[in-house]
Length: 179
Image (tube, rainbow, N blue to C red; front, side):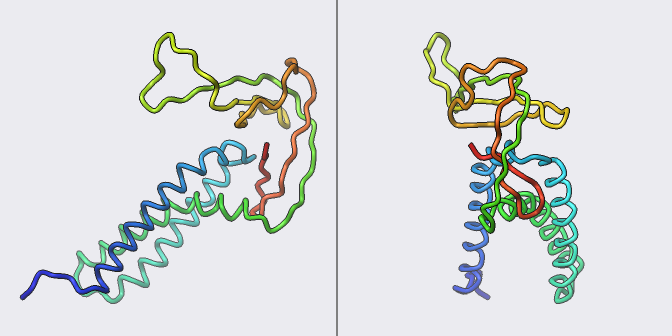
């Protein structure tokens, strides 16, 4: 008996690995959009529940063809973990799909705007560093929220000033700010 895999199995294995690596890369790029989504906690919570439900449904369908207990558990564990883990990413993408250009302006109370710098291996002491972006703190409906922008948005604004934010309507009902 040979231990080599046929080309279809190898193609499925490589495709699965590349898909998972791509989704991880997608998460890395999506974190800045999570920061600017209003109600992101609810979006993530709902998507985790939906991911677990989808994973359970998928596992029940895929595990039927397995005859061993280990095979059934493998389908259940992998389906539940992968669907639950990647559903917040997919939900965020679906929420931001450009299906509508509906935007609205709202006035919010400005709190502060802070530059931040990121270095992969830490910040070098004494080195002059240009900001990589800005955290913007505003009072939105009585709650202080933090937004993230690539460049300064409100130069010269003082705490308590009213500033305008442009909100895009999210497809899943979660509006998001785009600077």
